[in-house]
Length: 224
Image 1 (cartoon, one colour):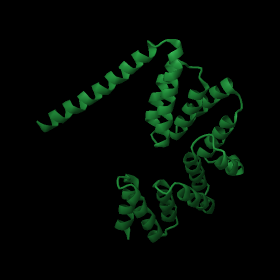
Image 2 (cartoon, helix red, strand yellow; image 1 turned 60 degrees about the vertical axis):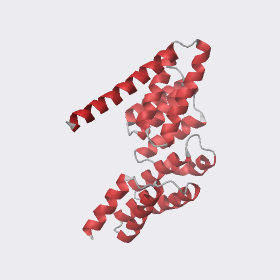
Image 3 (cartoon, one colour; image 1 turned 135 degrees about the vertical axis):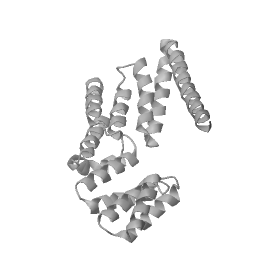
Image 4 (cartoon, one colour; image 1 turned 180 degrees about the vertical axis):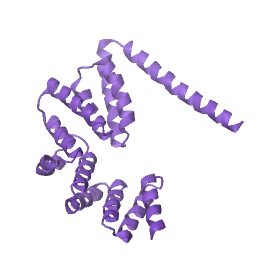
């Protein structure tokens, strides 16, 4: 009986979200042309907010609405490239970035996203070369730049380079649990168990609900 109640509750919640999404779309599409710019800015802002909170899937949903209003908007295209990259959909990320280039040309934002996209698949030579200037004048999120760089360093076994950026990242964003989690992953790879445990525990102090850190910590404790 309780399962049926739970199923109905989930169904109502899903229907409510669909209804609100359709309602928002109808309001936006019925707006005069001068108001559509406001709605596009709003949708892009929501998408950027979701990217900052590391929720690219939800970001893509907002950007889908923005595309309906204007499928030739350069800002929407660069955000799509970023969201697809964060979703690990490299083919779509490349296509969105190419579309952005066709609309806006080789801007600083295009170049930075191109370097991040290459680094995402392991080629971080351009990102390493331009990292300092990107951190001084980022076209997007500094945390995204740091995360992508560190991941690329891990792929290339450049652990010392990764640790240097993790230290800077944590110093600038002390409440972000991700630097500690990524540092823990590297220590675990190097079989430095106690250091890895310390980093995973720090991650969980910052965010008790950070499931990957809890899983990694439990796995280590079971093997020791």
